[in-house]
Length: 163
Ligand code: SF4
Image (cartoon, rainbow, N blue to C red):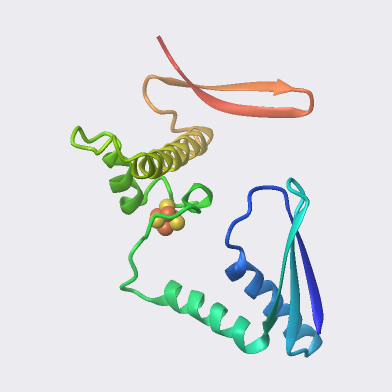
């Protein structure tokens, strides 16, 4: 059996599909049938420990790969949209984000409200990231200026609204 340790500095999430890819690679490399996975969470000092068989890992990896190849697949906004490179252009995420602006939106349902707010934030951060990338390539959006600030060794660039 091989063992895999992955240090996570953020919140606990469902990392099983990601771990299945790593575990399968290790099992293939070392010709083993089992992999013990340790998701180690530094913030809470906890660990999530489980074992993948090679069959289980292959099933998950093939399922994810099949979804990616499926031409009929639909975007399905989820808790990982904030990390998605496509979030600025994703129609499903934008539809979700619009819900928060809809005057008929059910503001009594805090769970629904929070989910919509998170989708809107993910979409907005994607748009900002894309706008800065395009500005760096020379296409600065009208009404904005590309500004650069250095703090220590770090330089950040952002778009500032002109008066
Ligand atoms: S932004 Fe769209 S494509 Fe990206 S993970 Fe979310 S739903 Fe999927």
